[in-house]
Image (cartoon, rainbow, N blue to C red; front, side):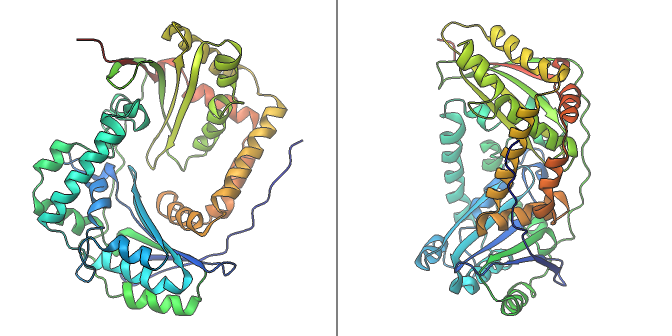
Length: 428
């Protein structure tokens, strides 16, 4: 039997301001550190056709400055107080955060309220960040080996014909170049409102003082638009194998990719697929690594990118051949292991190891105030249940060996996937 790790329950309080801003407070006075995070319910799936990349662009643009924060000074202000900050964008949300020594909490709240209430969106900021985003795309996708796999730009368009998940988060540079300033202003008005956001404060603070500061700084912010209404775009089920080839001028070794469309992040089966992913490709002790890299020596590496999203998910597995091993040989080896999970219950020992791994991951995700702030915002916004910060581990604990077999059968069939040959660019 494996050991069981128990995470300490995260105590939190949540409430709404009159303008619709959801607030979550998680007080922990054990260290003099505090994180202020604001998550906006806007990601690449909310963009209009022909205007991809707006959500990610805004992640950059809203660091430009505000009416009361001089252009280009955001990071200087934070670092001068011994803090750090960052932001990130997914298909579903955009998240900004600062972590400060706790005596700078007021500064963090003021800065995020400034970002929400007084952003300066002008042509010089748009032009500056346009170049920054282009360089990021060049570094991460265009000029990076396997960049189109890592960021899904060579995969998602094959899995999603209707849903915006088929577009890349970083978007099209042509779309950004073509956009007018008023379009950026309009995007801000539509999505960057209190009614479309959650504010999280986690760490060392005094509750009543903090509530008053939140009321003072965020309470006066008005909504420029009603809360966005979304309808989930239903994809047609994949019933025939999709075969595709992509080329990458930055690589010498090809990759065989098998990619599946999977359930949305809040579905219980998405949690079961996390177990399947860990079993097949979770590190050097995983089934595919041991079989293909260690034992048969047909693969240089195996890889996996399980991605849960608000409306759907994807599970991407692949392998790099060793020497002149064919991509078909890699496919056959991966399919053999998938078939085993579909036809045989995994061993009790493997099952216990999986459970222990996920318990450890769960504990580690809540081991810092920064991690807790992110988790609270994400569970509230994308799962609609903040209490998952304490209860999610029970979902993983409830998964049975029979669940693993059932889910592998339901979602990992060869006629429901993309088979991608990812090849070096042929010589001209």
